[in-house]
Image (cartoon, rainbow, N blue to C red; front, side, top):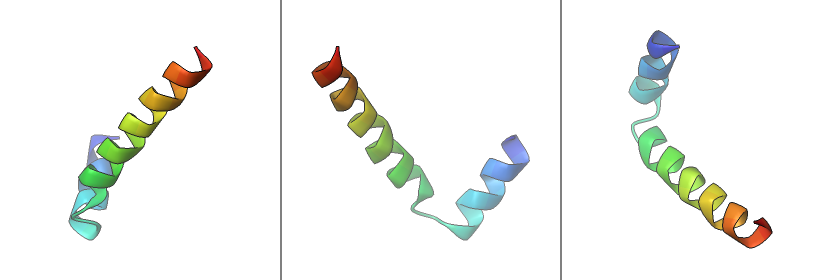
Length: 34
C-alpha cells in the first residue's frame, strides 16, 4: 500500500490535495446523511 501511494504521489503531485478535498467532501456528506 505504502509503495503504491508513493508512486501515485510521484506521478500526481496534487494527489494529496485531491485526497484532502475528497475527505472533507465525505465528512460533509456524512453530516448531511447522519
